[in-house]
Image 1 (cartoon, rainbow, N blue to C red):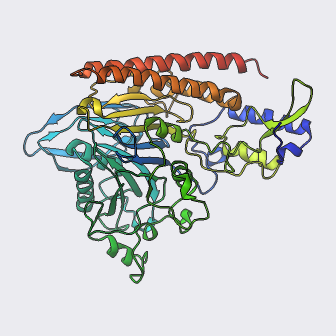
Image 2: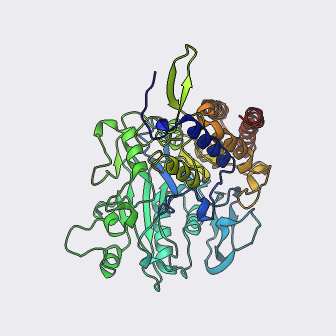
Length: 540
């Protein structure tokens, strides 16, 4: 029998039962990301805990894949489509917009503002248009993680936001190094107006972390640095800058803007005396002088446990050599993580007393304990029994819009070698659907966003309904969700293997596999939704 000692376990059963019923009631209205701070899913001061990206070198993956990833944790749009390759006449211009990331469908112009133009190129590549555009037809892929940085560097009147830099890179580049140089030079020339960002830029040979900031509230320009992940290593970016010492003499692993030290000096971010460390100069206050938080430590220590990394360390390595192959399914599993079974597990103190079949009593984790409680729910439990839940920002979160695992493979033709394993909503509960570098049309459900209103047939709400119901008794239902996630992965990988064995694969075949996997997943989540309504609809 498991025995725990927790604040809740010491409450009278009548009070405890009332508290748990109240939690269930609150959970039924769990928001994706509430705008009203009174019902926010963030505790105060954690608003910038927004995205996770894992980068995997080709020798670390076990099968030669290069991977990057992105949990888009926030209110970016959840519609997606394939933007075709195009040819342009000499003298045509590329229009730069702000507001595209919050639209409801491809043609929506609500809140969209034209902010400038730059010269267009003769030919642009086809790419997958997500909230942050992520994959093109040449197996160039981009993940993202915001780290904010010093607010004195943000010029909101500058032309380029980070998602527009992603778009340009995917349209114009076929490799990671050129993409980084292009985004850096464009931002320097026309102005970068976003907060500090890390883009994890990958191609079929290598993956880089590219970190960029503005240069002042009233100045146009950008400051940036990039570091390559060794081929046999894995790296992470979790809302804190991770690039450290810049060995710019080693051009195979480092790049930076010419002003990288000058901007830090000008704003008092570096005294010019000690060694220049990029993350120390451009860090965020929440990081408290470190280049990591719980997520970074958890992911790196999971794949390299013998390093003995701890939260007490002063610094985490930029990357680590994994002690086992970090393949697609490994990355998917890590992105589902909630620190279950560790000291950071937020469910471990939400306990009830249970009568066993032999009549003995046991104290166990409550069936309704889940790692994605709202702030109001956590605060209520902690008001009833102080110390019940100490908030930890988990890898998977309920406020995720969508997530990607971007897999790039040099041993296959570009059209099928590049795969975006796309998942809507909470990555801890949702399946992954393959979309390819050679895809040309996506199922209709993908073309509608579900953030601003309930859109039943949208990609997001096809899965969110069951996901939210599942959290009502997560300890009971989590095994069913994981089983379906893994079986959809099996289904997709089996179909992919069949196509890979063919000499030539058409876009129509790739589109058909995407639709087939989506239909299989949608059917499973609809069945779970019905079963969950049956379980909970009558009350309990």
